Image (cartoon, rainbow, N blue to C red; front, side, top):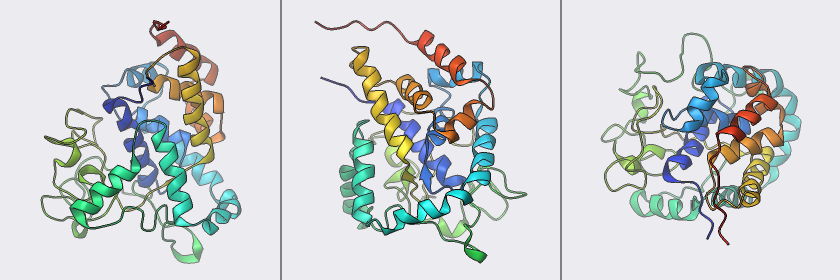
Length: 287
């Protein structure tokens, strides 16, 4: 039997999705996955990446710079995806998440049963645009607005907009229950939730996990390729566990421009790859 990501490991996907949304990016890229790895200080990858010079603030800045320089160039190509149906986009993201053990249909049913809302409505809908057809600023973009680290003037206790806060300090929209969107402070991260034992997390995220938001960045093509490659690496090693280290190796192998920009802001892909391989434990192959 092949095991997927552990509960802790799956949180990097939630953090990556949050980072993409906070930066105002339409797609979840491999660069955002690296940011997600840097959000959980409990993960061995957090220490490994830090030893290579990669930290969340510097990596986030590198991702922000890359997208600021290149996103407008990709607008024409990205517009083609607008013609795809919501169901097509939902199906593609469901399969990508299923490869790492996250059942999006179950999350959808849980949200519908508890809150009466369909998670797939407007799935991966393009963010609203500002004047001139350009996207508005995402969280953490623009002068005078730091990236979600503590309360801000005119915001809720955890930095959210006051009008987004419902009962028990959680907004009405987002990915799903609890920290993914609606629900109380504990949500899936509290007692009885699927992520009950997770935390503590990187400063600015807190034990509550990622903040819920209405925007749902869509999986980019290189991200799906990296997820598939991570599975291949695990099978090649005879490892029953899908480790986040395999995902990082897969990202390096995929070598998309965005993730390379983040990696090369502190180290080289070759140096990082060697460090990841050296950190992996021996795998006892079952016969």
